[in-house]
Image (cartoon, rainbow, N blue to C red; front, side, top):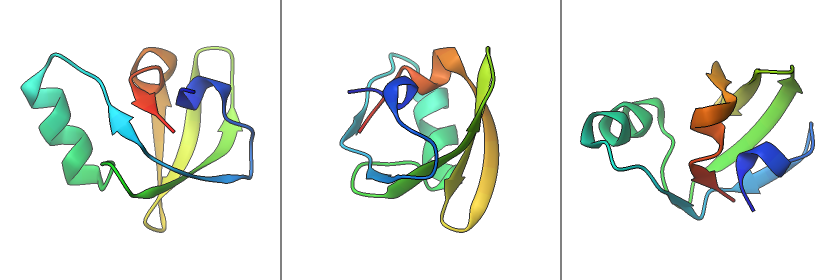
Length: 70
């Protein structure tokens, strides 16, 4: 299941990130978003969501959220 299907307020473990872009992979890794890390959806809007990773909050769009499997 992808991060798009996650429910707000529940902690999930990232199983994999599927992108074809090495720069995007490096960016997500710098945020602490990699396999085995915990992630929580704080809130959702129509086109984006706020996620919590390692006690930091980030706003990501739905296209990026679709690449993160939990």
